[in-house]
Length: 288
Image 1 (tube, rainbow, N blue to C red):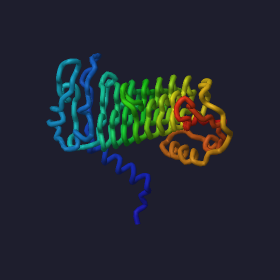
Image 2 (cartoon, rainbow, N blue to C red):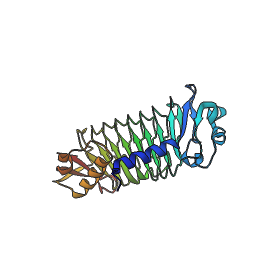
Image 3 (cartoon, one colour):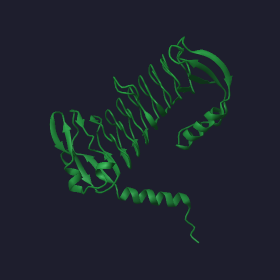
């Protein structure tokens, strides 16, 4: 009978996956914007090392290859690690449906836009529009998120439509704007118009909830676990209660390794309904 624990087996499995991953190391930092939607597990999983190097990128107006910008190690894997300065690299993980992308520093705009599955982990901060229109999967940002996290692009009626975005730092303005369904968790503060024109879905803010939160909210839930700016006058106080369903959410958030206390899970919330300028079926819940 083997004495190997489940934790040891999981670590061994993770190490095996890491051994088979593709590693991209930035050759030289650039101040030019780089269109990097070719960096996706779906495009790497069936390609050899030389084929990955030949995938196209755009650096400014100039077409280049992955091999021109990165040192590429590994092949035929849907596990990707990116090392170096990629804060000017846009659209990494766009449309991905599987696998994992791990970024060891900051990353540029449109991270994981339209992604349908898999996982993106950023050991740094992300620029604007992270997770725009995502339809599945999970994005974990260890630093700060920019503006429009999980929002819909201008002119689009809907934004995120499934999936989860976890931000351990702060997020900017219009977090979750026009979200249809899904989950966004911000452990720090948010800027103005959090959940603007929210159709449905849930946004949890553990720091300070910014001004004008929930403007145009139809049926979504915004949960403020910390301080809040004054709410819009189009939200009306309803009651103080202990919502059982929130315990499920909060325990799930804690299972992802984020700090959620028992007091927060079992606490009471003040419920404000709105926005009465639209359907008025949305809510802002404020932890007491």
